[in-house]
Length: 289
Image (cartoon, rainbow, N blue to C red; front, side, top):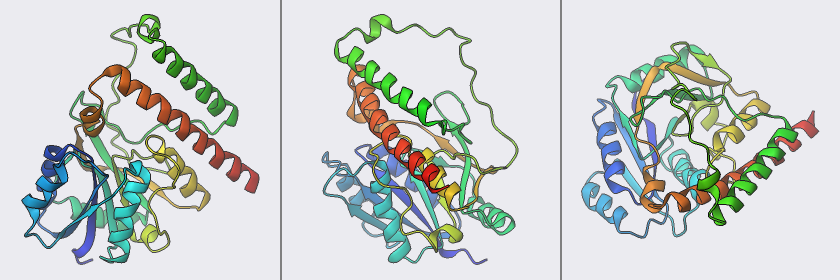
């Protein structure tokens, strides 16, 4: 399989231009010719102008400026659509702007993995640079509708407690041994929820799907919803330890929300909305069976 213009990276940018540039530079170090689509999600801080100036003479870098912040799912869908329809990409690699690619043979490995598995969506080993945790594959959210409804109620209560300024007083400190870091899974696993920081949509997916993610969410749970969709379509999702990226984590969110109170309330609000969307998909799918 020839690796010329078959691979397009889609990077969703929001405010943190240093991270985006570092991500782009790590991709440009790959020996193969690739296309890169940068989607600016209405940053409004001048950061996309810095990126435009940095790469204005590079024909394989395409920059799309959204007028509004469309969130994670629809923001990435803009880049996916451009890669699919304008660039005719066979493989579309959707990645966070705070990733660093460290394998020179990344695309060669990907080609071999796809040829042997024919997976529709592939997720690499994602290693956090914050704590060394390996984030793939994910455990996923329960498909029990009653459990999901309880989670919606729990986040609503947490949001109220935060707004009343009593969240911090009630929050229990985690003990040092409360949670072990997730270590690397050295075995390839099919049909698991894959972390949204790096998702590779292969030709089997791209040929059939006009968008990468299901619409409706702004942030959070896109992976769970995508997995439900893929499972219902009999698509193969694959985690492979043979591909690796580093993840700096939450750079864009941290750039916006300096206050821990504002950040957690942002998380709570979006988790409530995303869980509602997830529940709708669960009800729809269960109703089809």
